[in-house]
Image (cartoon, rainbow over all chains, first blue to last red; front, side, top):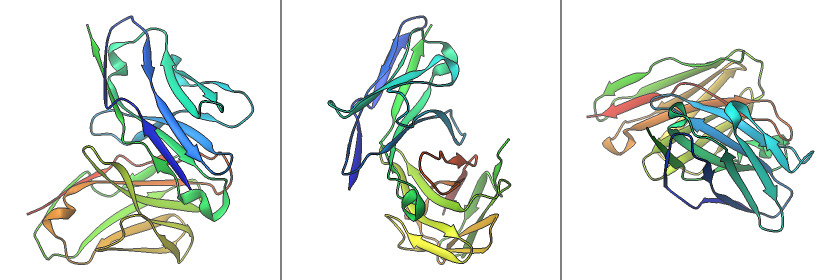
Length: 116
Length: 113
């Protein structure tokens, strides 16, 4: 069984300030973890993924996330927000591969607003 | 670049109509998925397919069926559209195996009137 909780449905930051989007997960196995971004009226795009090679994962557009097993967290951060970062962000937990690969669980999403 | 293409961006259909949503991917992915996305509910899996002619129900399959006759194409069928099926529908695909991310189409916004 697996689940994912995005702790904030909305986050608002000023341009140039840090971004923190929080995600907690639960899983009965060693999960794969992903962050996706969705801009208005678009599909989802992968930001980064945790592959168990390193706990600090760097993604596109300056985003990174840290896997903390003891806290079952995978929070997304960016040092300095840009106006183009305004979007909806999804944390996703997936089981090991094979036929179970389809059983990903998506968080409810966090809407990031960036103020000028 | 991986491309997942959904046949329509916007659709308006009448209650009771049979509706087909088509999705094509060009990367020879084994897995294909259909999700619906509603405000406050995130993405919910309707059906997925891990091979040609193979399908599994997701979390909300009622009122939907799917077809995968060719590896690159995955169709979602609303047998008799209802207003509560008004939603954004997203298709995705990926390779089988661990740590493989999904690639998404641009979405189809379906309105049933």
